[in-house]
Length: 458
Image 1 (tube, one colour):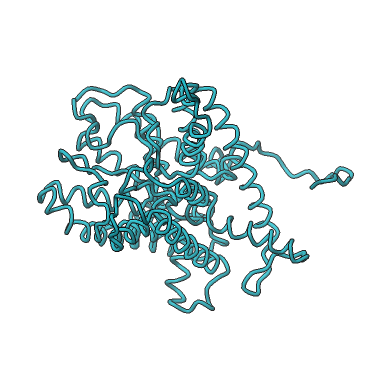
Image 2 (cartoon, helix red, strand yellow):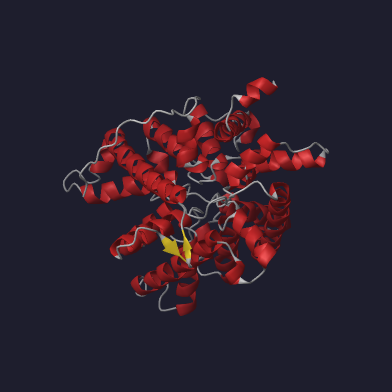
């Protein structure tokens, strides 16, 4: 057993762990009592939903509250939680609970899962993650109950509060507002509690567990923070403020707000945070200005932070990419920030992540245009190719970044497109580089280097 385990690398174990979770979730969802009508769902519905839950994406083929029973919703919530904090975090916590020693291999897997620079304090970080997760999700459920209990009653109100809080913290985007006739997230447009609590939970869950530890140890002393934490906080602040302003300016005349500044501000704040991998929305995206659709695509692409419940290329990758361009424009060889020089590995990984995301997006859009020809001509008399490509592009980015937002075409897609989205959601959750490394065969590094030759680029 020990010999077999050593053949599996940490990145392969992470990928394998998510695969096992997806298959287990699929099997449980296939049981008859998991649906409202007590009939077993078809395999693709169960599998697609399981992938979406374990990858904390939120894309669905059927409304969660109307299709899945309370049992099915509990199963989904369990795997949303596992997908959010990571299965290895839960395994190490269980090992600690039963008094089993956490070995070097498990610590290495944990380090890979949460993207920490070293193994120091790994077990303490796990404790912080578990305590913080339970604490924030409980606080969120309590605050949301002040809105949902009056709307749904005590029993359903408490359940909706717990489900929504965990889904928001894990950046999953699943909601069960339709559990009561007429219930919808759209009903909470401009609601102070929903518009503030959900973004708070999304922000905390997506900020990154390493950042948690840095802030916990150094309190509010910004100078003592690591370069990683500084980049995360600054980039996150920019990604909240600027989209908020753009949304307010472009949607000022939207009839949904009717000149209500408070309602517009709360909605703008909500929509500047949730697209970064959470997937919640309080309004129909099809009614938004085209500029905001493009902005949402950018936010989905960037996503949250490394070692968090969020997806996307991550804020650190985006910030390093910008810094690389800035350094090049200034004629500098090194990439610098906050009086520190970034290491070569981080710069190389950023380039690889960007390249993989671009290639996957292009290939996926191309395949989906072949799989879904009906989307290319939404009106037979006046083909709107630009609009249809935007819809396909939006759907692909939403899946790859584990966001879960949709322009309403997910349930209408064929099985080929559904399988493609499942693959994108899985790659997005495990991480592009992690997924690619898991496919690499074992073997020692070659000591022989081939002759070097320059290639003209640019």
